[in-house]
Length: 424
Image 1 (cartoon, rainbow, N blue to C red):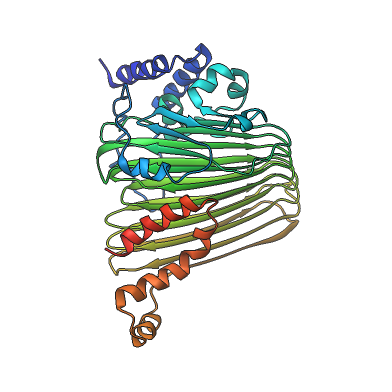
Image 2: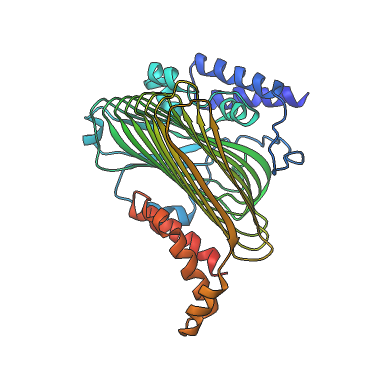
């Protein structure tokens, strides 16, 4: 049996496991065909030639919930959904929020209970137009569906926790967030993974539909393990006078290619992206923060801060595209990367693609360098050990972005992960 046929059977196995409707199976099959036919992706400064497309094996049931995940969940006082190896373990949402018309459940159940809503928006923002997004749509297992009705503004975030065990290497999470007009919502995504993992390629997707005058803040805390290849796509379609904010914290030792993108479709749409990255070991991260201005008088800001230890290698790309007709657009980019160790490597690549003459503002600033030895010397002259002085400087550099995370448990988790690696 050929590999294509084997994985095609896996597509049917995943769909059958979750008892999905026929339209979703057809969508998966089309995506798999796209995956087979699409060319191998190429990226400047990131070599993908040695990255195989091993799809792993779908796990028929969830493993036990790791203790670290249980400890984290015990500190949450807002709605959450827990997934282990692509299977929903629990969804916690108060009845009072359901009565407001909010839908928060696993995406597989939503396909059955809210089929028209899911069918309308699933893969409308992240399409099967490249190798890894097609793989995600063909094999996705686990992930949340969140719908917030018109003019509903819950005062608590909704959180999705993904836990992967050594056996869960074949899962591909996919989240779908739909914010109707005049709504306001916060969505959090947290990943827990073992420190060591078998060689596997996975694709992780979060797509957001922000309708007119809505406000959406998406925050993520990623931890991808050594030995894995992760393709992550986070993209929002932003309507008229709507705002989408992304705050992404990544502390990893894997091979990651990620894009965080706002497509500013409506007039007056706004996008803001903050990225905090700490690479260690032999981590390689290629992360693109992108803003595509299509509507008139749209605004965007990108801030990317990274720190690298040991032999980590990070490429930060900030890209602003202003298409013809996007009159009055404004955008700023700020990329800063610090190499803690001399063996680390960093590249900051700002890009401005402007096809409109009438632009309000558009600028970028990028810097890559080592820690300032004068700053370390100053702190050491005050009796502070060198290792602590280094941590203090890094924290001063990352603090504002960490504070932008929307919940205290999430901030504590990101801080703990950063401290774990900075103190090694």
